[in-house]
Length: 147
Image (cartoon, rainbow, N blue to C red; front, side, top):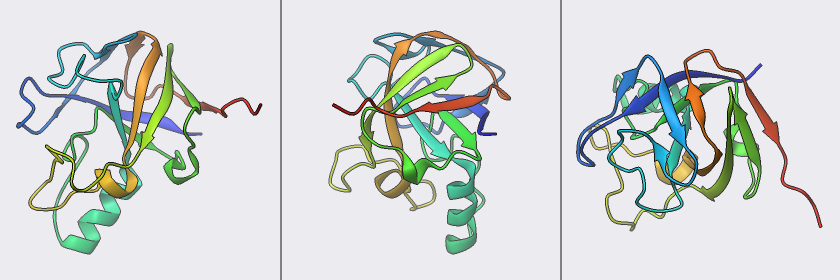
């Protein structure tokens, strides 16, 4: 079952994110205390640990949760299957996918030791319903409604 393995935050946009014991997701805002919260509808960044591990192997680096500016690090979530409008129930919180990847030319594309995976495998969400999330919370994908 897909689940959350880390909640990550930083107090400055230029700093790597560090893992927390828990995080408060706030509807219409993002992760409380995170430097990127409240800046756009891309309130939460999400990366799968499998993609982090693939980058480690490919580039010979030792990235972990939060290394690629991800607020939420997941495990066993098929991020590549997510579509715009899909919703993710993460513990008590509800997120909606608003962007897949990130243009490489976008300002502040974060990198770890020169490697950035957000353009290819990052997912950005807005917080529809807030709540306290902790590592171990289950993730349920609720596909976008079809017209």
